[in-house]
Image (cartoon, rainbow, N blue to C red; front, side, top):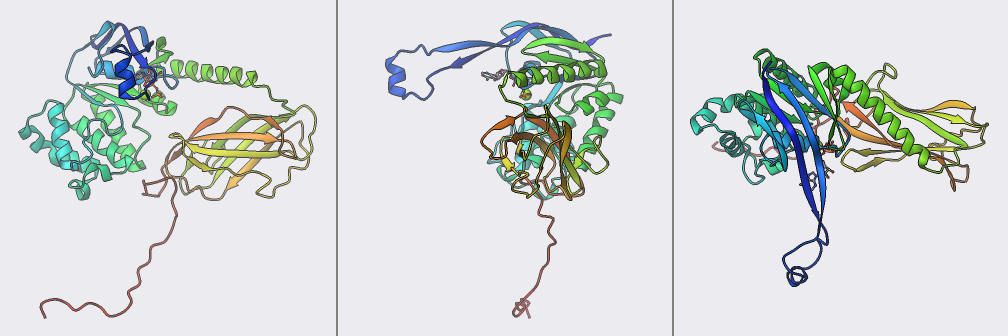
Length: 402
Ligand SMILES: Nc1ncnc2c1ncn2[C@@H]1O[C@H](COP(=O)(O)OP(=O)(O)OP(=O)(O)O)[C@@H](O)[C@H]1O
Ligand SMILES: [Mg+2]
């Protein structure tokens, strides 16, 4: 089997410069040499991506996935080893990367197309397809700085797939966009696959990695940990992530009179169903207590993956008296209609003593995803679920020309 991408003992180093906030004068007086630490983001990574296959990259934050994709795209230069790419590459690497904020969507399509090696004529020919796929006809002459993140991704993705690449590199964009767009992307991936093109995709959405990929590689701290069939590798990765989360958790010195064993968020049909915008959801905390404890207070917090604080309810504020715990049990927060927009979120949780002065336990936060429901909104964090009404008042303006 031939290889579309050969990664040969690849290592990539970054330099982290210190004292960045010093004034120019001080920096100049100290001389030209800045102080820096070296950091190897990729260490002797060696594998091949077979031609015509869909290849996934998984790993914890900072494990080097984006760095690896960027070296495949020739945006970063290897420090040791190398990457050989056999075929025309198109990449969607970061949200809005390669877009010029002041330019319109139209101008950015031309700019990006030419960066990806198309002539003006070739872009002319594909222009309608690109805009149509992105669903941005109305906004194509608006400066992209006014686009929502969903619109950015749609346009970027649409350009990347419509320039006829043999190898497509995609970094963590599958979770963005509404349901319809996600489906269109999946269709496009399958079409690509049938055409015998190669896809390298990075994602934290493990379900998607299992179904989409022919092969998956797992990076850990810049090293290739495992490579193989998607289920094997994803299972290994998930298990490892849980084990290290537990180990870290145990290091924290909580008294654990009550401890939260597991926190989860799910949709209307029970624990296996995804939380979905506009549908009922349950946030469930499973607890254990050494012996029954009186009046503990449970608290949760929800942040976006970007770190914005969304909400932080507690059983006390909600007026729910836990009274006395069992030695095991659960606390459910039943949400009649989840108004969070689709995307990635972080759930933190904690259990306190009755006077709130002592945290019995605060487990590591967990990530959950909200799937797109019927809401077509993409801006902000939540949907108001409002009905729009228009009422005219006063006198109607005269019709011109009469
Ligand atoms: N330009 C840079 N300068 C210095 N350090 C960098 C640079 N780019 C990445 N890094 C560091 O290299 C490591 C790998 O980063 P990378 O973005 O490849 O991780 P990742 O696996 O894509 O993570 P995530 O899942 O969060 O996207 C991180 O520790 C990151 O801080
Ligand atoms: Mg990344």
